[in-house]
Length: 225
Image: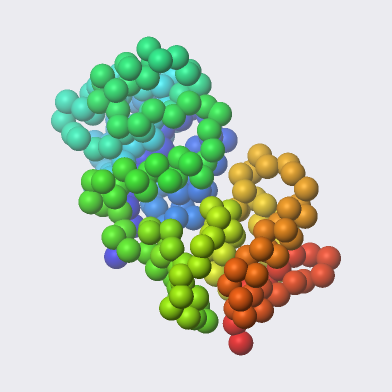
């Protein structure tokens, strides 16, 4: 099955890398452009771009110009990404035909969630995304978990934590890596907050909590024997 293709346009390489890393983790194919001209060249050359993440302030051609030109020939979803937060800028973006407008600084996880939501509305996202290991079934689209057929109520972070464990079953995960993946990169809280969430998660999934092994002095490993 071909991966969904997304074009990321930003003149800051670190922003492109951050967004790309989060998108690739969700199995998207990512194309990059550093300015408006390069973005248009890629858009005309590449086939089946499903969504564009487009910065506003760029050299050569700015985001407004790129959005306007693309809208003349295509209805591809466009998320405008900018440092500006004025209401008038948001209105300009929507008038140009943008589908979403996100101001910097932003949460990459929220951006990826919006990408998924827009693609699903367009009929290009996954209809169902389920993960099953050892009697635990996780439906990431419906945000539901069952253990041996019984529904389990998890908080947002508990759900994200369990999802990360199940996706990396059998792999030793440090607390720092868990913080980077489940919490935002810019989260600088005490890594021991993970221990608290793991304790609650274990309690909620009952006997299956044994799957979450503690690696003393390092972190955790999700392992089903």
